[in-house]
Amino acid sequence: MNDWPYPFWIAHRGAGNLAPENTLAAFKLGASYGYRAFECDVKLSRDGVPFLLHDADLARTTGQHGVAGERDWRELATLDAGSWHSPSYAGEPLPTLRTIAEFCIRGGHRLNIEIKPTPGDEAHTGQEVALEAARLWSGQRVPLLSSFQVAALEAAQASAPELPRALLLDRLETGWLQTALDLQCVAVVARHTLFNETLVQEIHTAGLRAMAYTVNEHSDAKRLQSLGLAGLITDAVDRFIPETNV
Image (cartoon, rainbow, N blue to C red):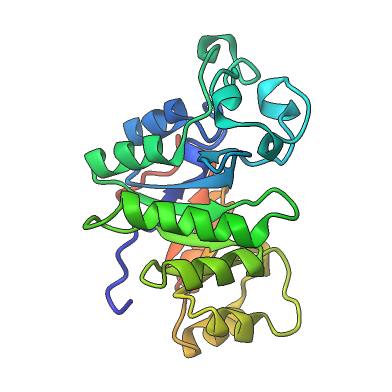
């Protein structure tokens, strides 16, 4: 991607910590702060519906117990994904990827979809999320697909090669750059504390963009901007003005 199409600031899980993560309410709140790009986590229900949730287990954000991917969407759709955050969000549902796609396309927002498979379902999730994203954004400004799971990105690459991909890293393991190149990624998205001049130069020399998560302090944002990163993912949507860099 010679012309990088994604805004510099990306709201983490919709609106960071200000609203229940990975819900439509969070996306609406993030947009109210002027954000034009969002990150979210997507996995599959037992019957194959792509929906937003970070954890494999339901407990933290719905008060239910058990693996989310072991339930059909009809049941998941009835869960309260907002009360855990605050009473004002009681009854906020888990959204499907379709719901978020409609919101983003209607508002002209860009999306970074982190493929977040239920453990053991990496390839299937990568395939189905990529196919659904390609269908939902057909003829639109396509999302960026990212994942820590190589098998998920490999399946996404095979299923919808036209969608751009990014390798997520929380540490630098041997061969990480070659993995990104083999996956024909356009970017590497890493924990912000990993970045220094050497790492950024290595990524740029390979023809890739560098992005960082989760950047919530101004000092970190300034340092990363000076290194030439293409994007920062943040929880602090109320403290960073997205129309500017830092």
